[in-house]
Image 1 (cartoon, protein in one colour):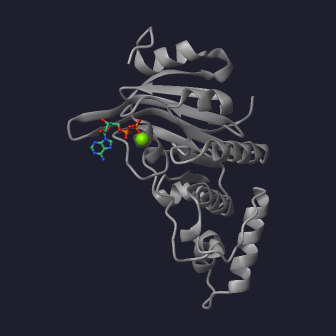
Image 2 (spheres, helix red, strand yellow):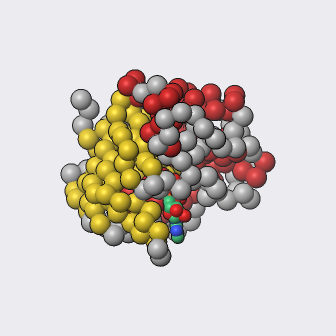
Image 3 (cartoon, rainbow, N blue to C red):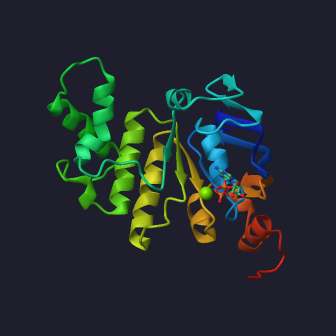
Length: 246
Ligand code: ADP
Ligand code: MG
């Protein structure tokens, strides 16, 4: 069994009157593709925001890289290798591909002047690493959602990601783009990176994941090997209903 790289224990979080999470546990091993599933409002986004230091939990601990935190700042999460690919993709539309990937890294250095050649070189290496071909000088506003996603992934790799969290990444993608994204996810996995793939789409979950954790009403329902699930079981865990109703 691969080493555990992230362990969230007994995480609870309430927002004014809403118990978004109650005693939730999540364990992620190195190089694992782990799906976090659950219906809308089940607490998936709240959990990943806690893991990445965006929200402070009311209760619970996050163990990562041998350290235990009761609260994690966003900078600590990044330092520990946690990277989120958001749906809005946090990208600067007027900058080029290369600038979007590598500029913040260059700016965080001590250099006074930006070394544009270096920005491009760094960006190229990051893109090559995921086997993606694109014009580095293209303005990001001209790209598709799928391409923007790949830029966000390249940037995550440059930030030494150990876990890449993707919150419902396939929502705006075509079938072909989903297939391409899944190839990249497998490529990341082969580099020892863990993926937390947030989704409620049954077919995708079964196609890509090795582990599945399901939340319902802010609580853990089950966590286990994907091979031990079938469609009916998955729907049952997600909804609590035995038969497919709508
Ligand atoms: P999911 O991502 O699974 O759809 P969320 O984590 O977004 O679920 O939401 C879980 C519950 O917490 C929902 O009832 C949602 O309305 C509530 N919630 C999430 N974020 C906030 C917030 N910032 N303020 C108030 N309620 C929130
Ligand atoms: Mg969500």
